[in-house]
Length: 363
Image (cartoon, rainbow, N blue to C red; front, side, top):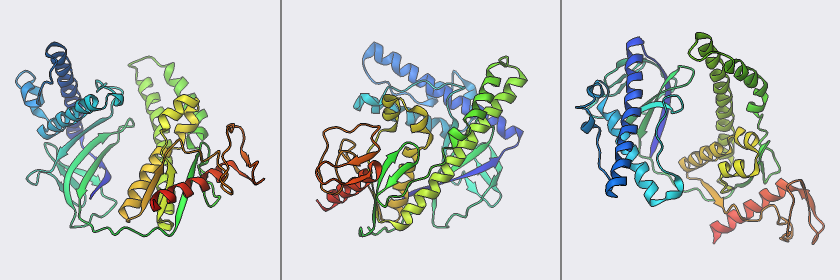
C-alpha cells in the first residue's frame, strides 16, 4: 500500500530560485511536448513519442533542473494523452498556464538521492532544506517519491510518498451507516444525525468579496496589487484549511464506529452546474469527504459502498417501500400515501441508501 505525508519546508533564497526554475521548466516541457504531439498527429495521424532529452540541446537551461522532474512530466503527459483516446469524455490535455496552474514537480527516489532527516530533507539539486517534521514515519516504510509544491501564499511544501506492506483482514459488516448528501449540512445519516458542516466559505464570503474588489481596483504589476492578491489568497487558504480539518475529523469519527458506509455515487461538478447551486454544492467539499472516507475505511479493512445515483432513495418510503412518481425539491417532509408515514425527506433517503447498499453486499 502507499501512504503520503505532507510537510512544510523552508528553503533559502538560492533554493527558492531553483525551485521556481524547476516549476517553470516542467511547465514549459509539458506544453512543448504537447504542442509537438498535436502538430505531429494533425500531419501524420499517428502518436509522436517525445522525451525531455530531445529538447535539452535546443534549450540548455533545462539541464539546470532535476532530470527526474522532467521525466515525470513526460509520464503524466503520456498518461493524459492516451487516456483521452481511450475515453474521450475525460477531455483532451490542456496547456499549463503560468498563473493558473499549480506550481509543483515530482522527483523519484533513486540511489539514495532523497534523505529525510529530523530537521532537514535532502532533495536532488537542492541539497538540505529545513523541514517541519511534525509526524514520525515507521522505519519499515520505503520512500518512493517526493512532490515539491508552492501555494499562492508563497508557502512551500513537500509531499513524501511511501510504500509499505500490511496484511489487512476484511472486517465483517455489523455496524453500517447510510449517508444522504445535503447541500448545507453535508449529509444526513441513517441514525437521523446531521453532518453540521459550518459553511466556512459562506462565513468568509463578505471578507472575500471586499478583498476581491480591492484587488480589482489595483493597477496590474504594482506592489499594492501583490499585497491585495496575497490577502485574497490567504483568505481562500484559511477556508480551505478549515474545510479539510473538519472533513478529516468527521470522516475519522465515522470510520471508527462503522464497518461499512453506504453513499450515492454522485458527480458533484455535474450537480453544481446543472442545478445552479455552485457555491452551496462546492463549499462543503462532499467529494473530498468521500475520498477521505474511502481510504480511511480501506486502510482498516472496512468498506465504502456506492449505490447508483439514479436509485430513487428520496421517492421511496423507508417504511413500506412505496415509490412516489414525483417529488419536488421543495418538499422537505416525505409523506407516504400508502402507509401514512411522515418522515424527514433526507432521513428517509439515508435509510433507503443503507438498505440498498446492504442488499447489494448480500447479493
